[in-house]
Image 1 (cartoon, rainbow over the protein chains, first blue to last red):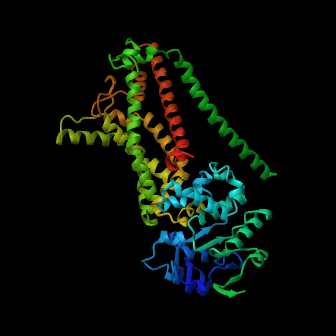
Image 2 (spheres, chains in turn blue, green):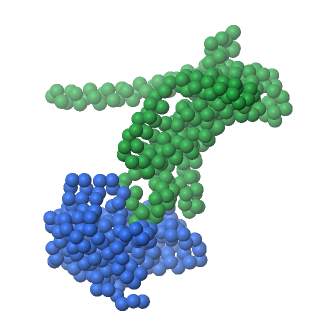
Image 3 (cartoon, rainbow over the protein chains, first blue to last red):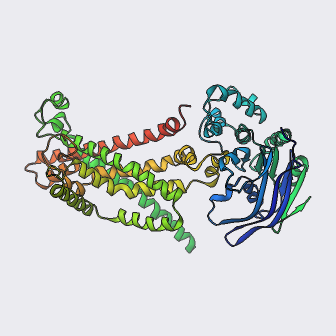
Length: 235
Length: 295
């Protein structure tokens, strides 16, 4: 294993717009490795957009345009993720993402967690179960669901569904985890569990999260980035 | 005061419209059932032939609707079998791959296609059959296959549009689930988008089944005849329920014969109900088993 870099993600001179609406202007920022970085700021200033730049999830939006470069340290070296040689599927397997609304697929808990493995072409059933257990343990969900893995994932509570989505992202062992307001649809108790979970993941991956809740940022984040007028203000 | 009056009258009108519609469905079904109930018997299906002999294809049925029922079922099955893959594939293309420009141009053509009167589609099928009859082989004439192709053509726009709409209406948080986990475009469509849009797609299929089962104009020109017996091959002529109802109500000799027409109408309704149920069952099963394997 090569030495860990100081910065996991390097964003350089980034411009981003939806049609006429310029969201990010000449943004240059470094995201530290193995730390929790929170992106804060008012609505509509491109916080969620910034996250989707790291896994290229914005690309199917017809009017969106981007200039500049994003480099992520993956498999031992910094790589331009927008270069032609970079495989989109591989990138998204290394850079996991969890959304605002829990989005479990309409299938069993077990199958939800296996889903990314199946997409990656792994079909060995013997390796599935340990991988599922590890991911669910990492997401602090194993004890609650170990006896009901075959049940429909949509029967879980909101907080559990969100942790299921975290586990589903973690099963691919991502190096970077993007969290887009992961607790905004949850109650206080569920939020606290998710926050504990995020803190526990700091050792394994680089986390970039969007949050509206300043108190939450204080509790969880190592560093805050505030987006203002398309640029970044360090907190 | 005026606002309240308008409010009230809109509500009343909405209620009334719903009521009239429900009443007419119940009235229509009731009318057909009461009129045709009396003629529902094995005799209606098999005439003077013994039912077992007819079902085992040992003897031909001449004055029953058994051949017409089989004809309609075969025709609908064949037409949907042809139209479904093309329609769904075109719908997927429209929703997921086409650029906005292509979407609007193709969309216009599909809407025009949907607006073509079925008699024109029939005429076109007839012309195609004649063309092949003269140029390729004189064994080709209006037949079951030509009818099924024409009907498939007739229902294609419904299938394309319902598939397209069902896919386009999926919310973005469903759309990004699989790509965020490293799925390719095709994997996203197969594993997430299609299963989630299935119920919309199946309602398109149900609509198409109904359209194929009831259409008379297309089949009149492309191969249906009053007495053909069971269809022996794709290239043979055949009988169909709507055509039977049409001929018998146009030229019945006595009251008993007309009653057989009502009987046939009940059977046509039952055939549609059967096909609808089948489609609904498939919808529930498909999402769970075909796409994701058993739970």
